[in-house]
Amino acid sequence: MKLLITGTTGRLGGVLVRHYTSRYDLLTPGRDRLDLSKPESMTTALRDMDFDLLINCAGITSPDVCEREPELAARINAEAPAVMATECQRRGARMIQISTDYVFDGETEDLLDETLITNPVNHYGRTKRDGETTVLRECPEALVARVSWLFGGSNGPSFPDQILNEVRQGKSLQAIGDKWSAPTSVHDIASWLELLWQKMPSVSGPLNLCNSGVATWQTYGQQVVDFAVELGLLAERLEVKGNRLDDFPSFIARRPRHTVMSNARLAELLGHPVRSWKEALREWLQSLCAGA
Ligand SMILES: NC(=O)c1ccc[n+]([C@@H]2O[C@H](COP(=O)([O-])OP(=O)(O)OC[C@H]3O[C@@H](n4cnc5c(N)ncnc54)[C@H](OP(=O)(O)O)[C@@H]3O)[C@@H](O)[C@H]2O)c1
Image (cartoon, rainbow, N blue to C red; front, side, top):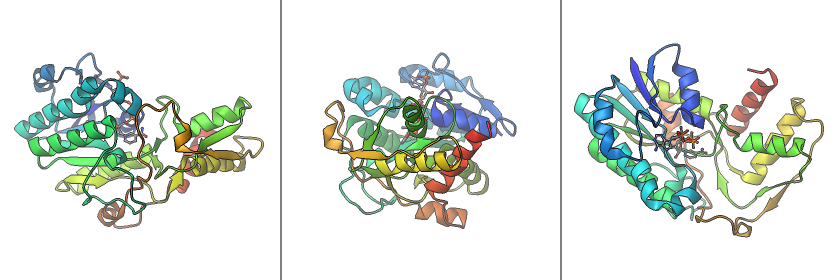
């Protein structure tokens, strides 16, 4: 099977390559061969590539950059995925579009399932929502995989790396205590995606891919510190103090507050409960100890 994966210099795409490289033929074009900011150039570029499955991990992922550069964000996050979907539909290839919990407004404390109407509060969320809509319009059999608060991999520091670095630099620890989501392991996502396209090729539409459990940035950060102490990555336990989302005037884009997605549909497809973010986080931190 031939896979085309975009965004492989990023957190998720990089891990997908590591997971799949020994078992599949991979095409991993960077922006020099497939530039999502120029959707009009992409049809020709894609037609020259041989693939049966396209996983689109590329995008502008910073809400503040999307707010500052709305047209660029719309091209990369919405128009480019539509071109990919059109080409997948034309050649009968499968498409997986990676999306986000930020398609929701975060106004309800309930778990967010796939049937809920999206209502993004910032331009990042709007462009990702538009990407979902256009992909499913062009390629109705596509899978739209919504993920949240990614950790793991080695392409740039994720939140746990930042916390560990701050402790090592002797900084006091602070993180937002009134914004909730589900931290999710990119390694788990790699396994779920493979299972989905291998064993359940007819699963399509939006699907939440997140670990179980809820966190704020503060409780997430504290858990990182506690596991790191337990595993010998840090010498002493420090407290992560909570601050408020509203205390971040430097944020350009408004952030949704409660975006904990339900993974009930994923659990049903897997045939077992989805493991917690804490278990996945501990395992990943343990792999750092082992130098894996
Ligand atoms: N990170 C999270 O916590 C999170 C949460 C929810 C949803 N998601 C979604 O998950 C997906 C993957 O996120 P991530 O954290 O792995 O992203 P990331 O680390 O920010 O990486 C983004 C990738 O997109 C590529 N890209 C950007 N502009 C491009 C262009 N014009 N042409 C071609 N490639 C371009 C980047 O390539 P360059 O290296 O060339 O810039 C990079 O490989 C995204 O769809 C994101 O919306 C992420």
